[in-house]
Length: 417
Ligand code: ADP
Image 1 (cartoon, rainbow, N blue to C red):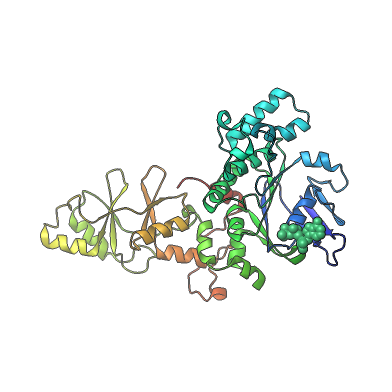
Image 2: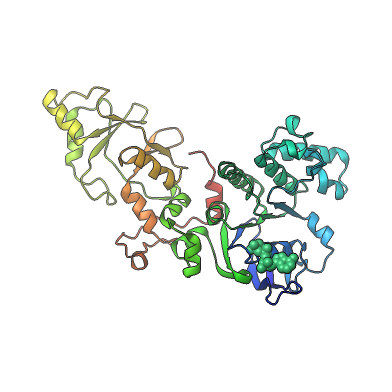
């Protein structure tokens, strides 16, 4: 989709609401328009499905200029979801969802099947919800029906105007997660308007940060905008905590893990002592190890043995014997490779800043995330090198710290960790 020199002047307004906006959106991509209230986000969005007619400029979708075609026909190929769902109150859930397929002349049986399919897709039981009226739904359920309605005719393009603006924060998180999951499956071209930058970071493959008259201050991936806001306006919009927000975007499987020394539960004490004396375990953990990680017979993390656990044991038992199974601190914080570094940080803080054991899907030990892993990720730029000069950091370059291309990131997001 291409917006080409798009301008909107409302009658009686001296300044245009949107001025000369040009934006290219790839097929299957989720682009977020984010910016302060009144900057022209909604006007820009509504010009795409011609709910608002542009004063000048062009929109092409799939190479076709849609600026001149019949707007009613156009809207059947573009799904539209808005704040507070905008459901028709006098129609049941099923009737609301069936609206566009019916207008498009689908046979009754196909419409009925499609309604069922859409309700399943958004996680609502058709038996329970199909015949309900919108007033008997919670805000989050209404929003789900709104998304189901927007997707019902299987449009390639979906426009979403602050779709989750009217629900409580917990419901909003769930709806965002669900949209990310749906999008992994459906690969629609989505243009999504919000004033909430955190929502933009979470949901978007790319974000267009807009200032007055929809002027594009920066158009890039969430990673790139968080790492290098183009100017003070964007920096102000990114807000505090850019480092922590970036941890949200990075998956454990994308970073080089710290190596902590490991041993098996039956190994003699002298083996464990030797591991601690062996010196640094990996370049990212330059100090001597403070822990040995004991793995059980299935190579799952079992317990952390601290230096003091081992010195105490040395005076209490022969060094040729294994430690009792109860020795050390049971491993509490652990995380799957599909988890985010933000999850890892939470686990690390909850476990007294001990490294967090990373496990494969079958629960076996793979590596660890420690403070150095997190610092490297926060200081790395999206193109791979540590951002020492710009942020005054002395972090080493982390060449393994590849940028996550939008496809990879979307595919990885939402997986259980
Ligand atoms: P946003 O979605 O970013 O909050 P809008 O696109 O709704 O911004 O509005 C952009 C500007 O256009 C605002 O200054 C708003 O007051 C003005 N505007 C929006 N709709 C109309 C309208 N129908 N008539 C006149 N001015 C409008």
